[in-house]
Length: 489
Image (cartoon, rainbow, N blue to C red; front, side, top):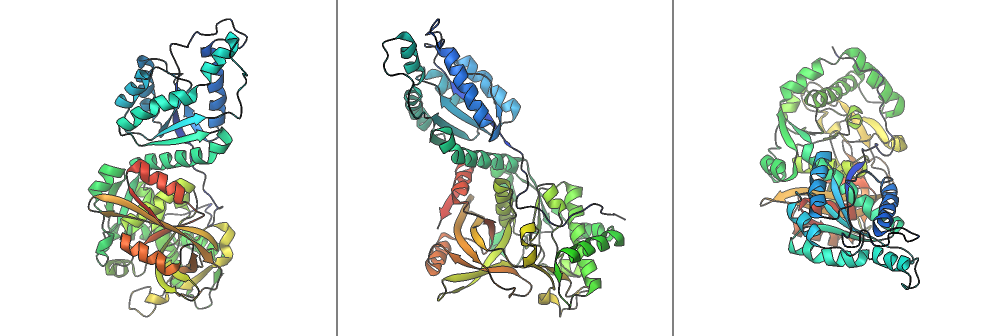
């Protein structure tokens, strides 16, 4: 029997994510390399070397940097490509240090593998030289010609049809955009090595949620494992009474338990939830997509698990209900982008007078943000309370989704193409109202009827991932570097 020790049931707002690993490609000019030898500020190579060192110090605040040295010739570019591949960088930042012979850059574009590229031109507030009468100032003038190099290189980037993000500004001003790109690139890398588990099958009452697992693996990255309810049942049976009771006690300490919750059913819902964690551990999953509306899960287990095991956070993994692989992809992507707690919702209805809509979802839900313990109640799952299933009415964590600005984001496949559809809305404070559903009322930025008219015309399913803040710019970046279609409203 498995015991669970030293567990916790809540986490801070964000989960610490590993830094993005960024390859740095700084392109210098071979012709200028030794100009200025003997000058007070040194030759071109020395000046640009000091400048690059200062940039790397700044980039280290945002990412783990992999730097092969300044690139001057084709051999340097060739070595850099091999170095970046060996270092397994998530993206490559490219920056011209001045005008440069463009054969090196063209060679790099031709030979580099499929990886996100960002074209960065750092800008100074003012130049140190006033004129170029002295050789020292003339060399500085040449060394500060990054704009010339960037313009030279831009045409070739387009001719190679490479998707390159362009950022031009001083570091502090460019920092948010660089950080967003780096996080999107890290998310892409995580997707390409991720393991998803589907427990146990696609949702047979929601065909529109089906996504081709071959396309997911070939075009995006995650490999998909199908896991049976019988395997989950085995893991649940192996959870000891002591472990289940300890978890139940801790949940009862942290959250309000409603008076009509049956302790025996509470214990079995907790045990089943720990069984989900055991399945994640056994298969080393990054995402577990649970079909919890199939009759088979109720006939096999007698209930659907009602709680979100914290071990998912410990492994930077996610758990989603209703067997929707696309929704699982979206929740996972937002988690990797932000490290935040991601909710799962479907819009229920609109109220035109208030300009709002209600949304939420049943099943396991991430309620574990410590800031919002007061919004969680342990409640009977009334939707199934009157059924004949063995543990009918087993409780779950009933969460009123926290107030504040949220991004709703949807992911699905249409004719072999993947797409993201997103919009923002304010989650409003209120009471727990929709029994068996974690939920809230939302006021969107776009008039509510206009919003859903646009979303319906675009074509989605009913499922959306919901995250704190406005993530539309980051999602657009993520879509672009993964070649997804993108729609925002």
